Image 1 (cartoon, rainbow, N blue to C red):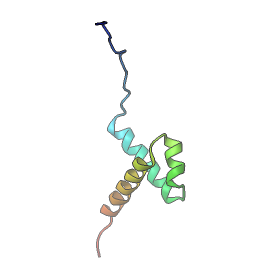
Image 2: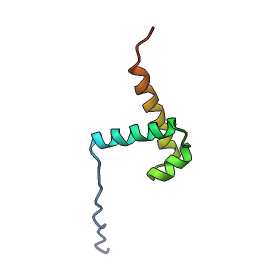
Image 3: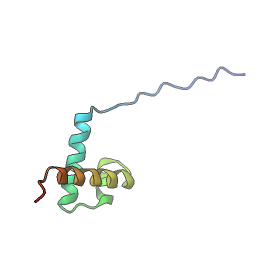
Length: 68
């Protein structure tokens, strides 16, 4: 048996505030006409993740509106 030891991996995590700002920016860019695929490439995220972000930002903006 060899003493295999995995190399340490440093994960960089962003504070929630900067993730929220990034997600608002993604939502804004989407609203201005950037495609899901373009946003995924720009932010180095999957298309699936961008879709979830866009859905979430739309829900947040609807929550802020008053119902008539």
